[in-house]
Picture (cartoon, rainbow, N blue to C red):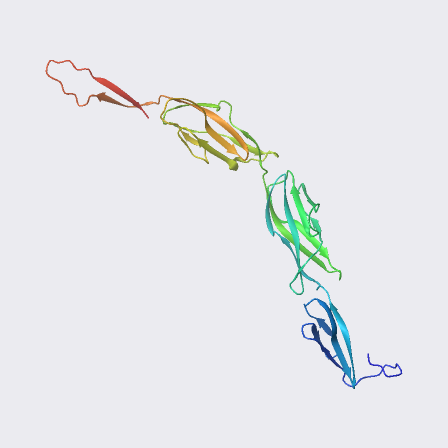
Length: 277
């Protein structure tokens, strides 16, 4: 606004606006666009009219929000556990901007809480629920100072919980098996919600060989009872089984000695050697 000595507003002859470098830009009609450098800039904007000139200070504060996101954008969560998320705001200058959105989840028996976290953080807890991939399993909504609504979502895959119970069939505490023979061992693991966790089962043995994933066991060749020779684990649950290795099924017979060499009319003791599998 241009005024004369009496305080009356008067049109100026081509008022000229200018702004210091780095503070922003200004249009001939005075339309000012702030730059991305924050701070208080003394005398940064100047206008000249006729033989007069005046300056104004400029305070550049944080830019408005441009985008809202959630980190992590995808998450795995086991039942009866929690995962932490944070809202990530980016302003019009590309800088991170702290936001405090409203959080929600559509997951059955899921809940959200920000207790003990930063203002932009939130904790998702899922109790016994459905095993599923939920595209918008964690949601954030934010309304800025201009009443603009920003929304973001993260995909959440709900998995069975940690192993709660590991069992083996009755009678499998002691396995009787002929030497060198094979058998399929069984075990069952479930979480606290009753969901199957057989994927967590691993096998090992100190006698013979066993497939760590399937439980296919092959007995060794040493006969005897071997306490706790087979070990099965799922999560932090363990069970042990003993093995009684007995003679195997007859597989072949040899005559000793063979070939037989004897003098005519002589007597020679022959033996039969039996072998199992």
